[in-house]
Image 1 (cartoon, rainbow, N blue to C red):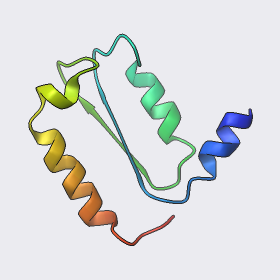
Image 2: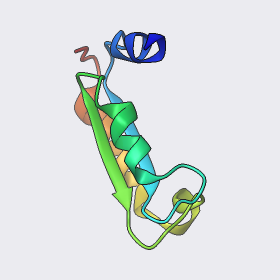
Image 3: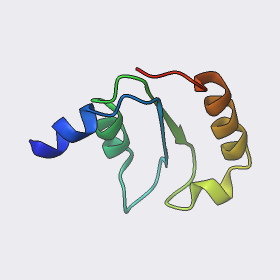
Length: 75
């Protein structure tokens, strides 16, 4: 698939986040997206849907922690 080749070309760390009850983008797709990216990290937030980032106050801290940990790194 052309899309998988393009995604696997991403050489920067990636943070893929989703809610465990998201009916628009099922959590399974978050893992499929992250799979081909060498330095991807997946976080699925419990008891939340598509608006998980508004439901989980720790989302901002998780993103900040990811950015701090990966600053200046490439795959």
